[in-house]
Amino acid sequence: HITNISKIGEGTYGEAFRGGGCVFKIVPIDGDFLVNGEVQK
Image (cartoon, rainbow, N blue to C red; front, side, top):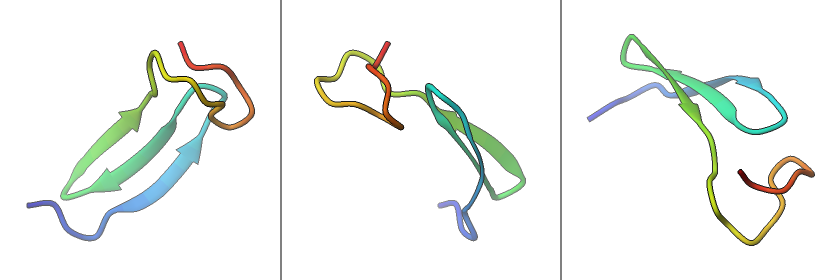
């Protein structure tokens, strides 16, 4: 269970979050809708 998650960055193809002493980059793949104004990879 990860607590205290906070968004630390945003790029064209994904977003970065920090929580529980780790950093996570979320990149949407193969979807039908735009993410941050861009087509998914």
